[in-house]
Image (cartoon, rainbow, N blue to C red):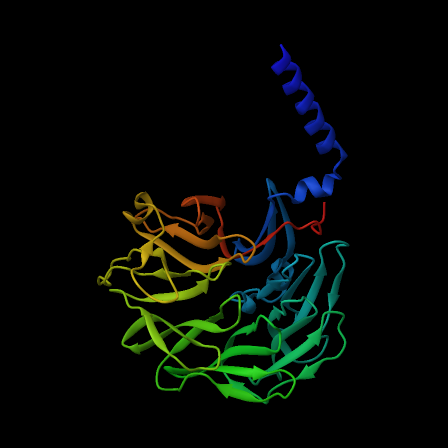
Length: 373
């Protein structure tokens, strides 16, 4: 009886403590918001899912109904690391694009770059204060300038002259540099831009394709994909471009590498079987230590024993969770991309966004109290 009284007393204390916590704090515990693109009836939308609730932030229905020629348009977007703001590129009826900002606390939407240029590919700095994006004059496609603007729409700065086919903008962890890829045909260069001086420093030579560079959490190393040895392989180098080393070479193509949040592993997508003519190939997420060694297939066998496509990895820095889009490719059966999460520590794979539509390009944010209720 004495133990029972103690247990009831402890339960009463715990319940009283939980009731004293504001509801927003309870919601933020172990919580995740999953942002993603969804293609529905031929147009794209930007959505966020929290628990069982899904909120549409923006879609292109009105634009595409007025101008069907823009049907291939996809939304480019990014989410600040604290989840407070969402930046995205949206077309107007003339076919030009501006950068818009959503305040997830108030629901307010602002056009940050209202002009006659085409502005795309917004990326937040780590502190959430600045947004880098690509911009070009109307009719001058594939030659973009890198621009920088404060999230309040002021202090817009052009950082570079026009360059050919820029992609993969990303800030260094200290927000002093912007890394990007510039491409010419079947060759490309990973380049580092010093924001204060606007000086450019090529980290790789334009002798092959080098793509999808990502900083380590500490900012001292970079992983990327390169075909300098025929197939697409995973490479690693120091942040100044020195110390280049082949990290992983599989039997197929390997791409989209990311450091995990603790910096102790590199995860990437691998087409781990040789390509077979007219047949879909198998994909999986692999993990390897930055110093090299054996790579480990993280995806359970019940998925990889069938034809399973995947792409667009997003790795949380707060928790060692990996998000990606994936779908089965069974012949004679239509399938759609769903959003999956993988818990590295628990080796647990879960399908978190799935319906009759293609859901793509996930980004996850944790412990966020900003999301609209």
